[in-house]
Image 1 (cartoon, rainbow, N blue to C red):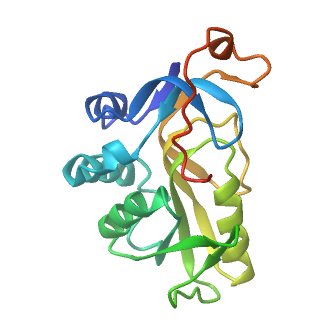
Image 2 (image 1 turned 180 degrees about the vertical axis):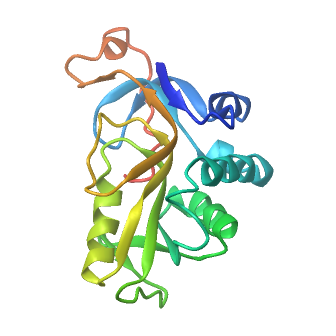
Image 3 (image 1 turned 90 degrees about the horizontal axis):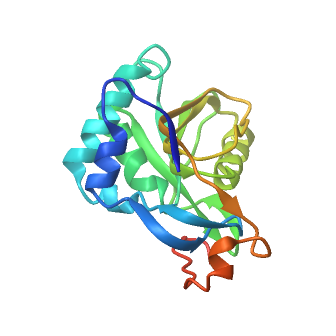
Amino acid sequence: MRVLSQLKSADVYRVLVETGAILEGHFKLTSGFHSKFYLQCAKLLQYPDKTSYLVNAAVNEYKDAISKSTIDTVVSPAMGGILFGYMLGLALNSRMIFTERKEKIMELRRGFEISPGENIIIAEDVITTGGSVFEVIDICKNAGASITGVICIVDRSNKVDFGYPFYSLIKIEVDNYSSEECPLCREDIELYYPGSRK
């Protein structure tokens, strides 16, 4: 695992380690690939004070693009992005809503609505392939919203391009393996699938 970048104003990696959010073992990722490391940001998000510290650091770091004056609504995909998005909404004094799956289709539910021209930022906890975020982008675009960008706690993607500015609290590069080429499988290390999408 390689830490490639992080906010100057906060030791994100230290907080992730302290809260147990970086797991080591043999994991199957949502993408289907296997990895020695898994980022379980729910372990971080159980501490509102630590999450608030990182969110405020992110808002300060990206203040030219993400500010109380430019964001009307934070939108997050369930489940992982909800708590981070909520804390970001609090820091920005903006509304926060979330999308969720119904029969495998991501959609707005619970009476949430997006208005044409509404300035939105999409917030996620960990981005690997960006699949859920792409679905949220489509929902926002179809509603006529103005998407300011995407922000996440951990970017472990390989330079995913959402077509909008992409901000992260920390970028971590983790080796992924197909099940056929996984050295952890060859060592017969027990495989875990901690992801939210079964």
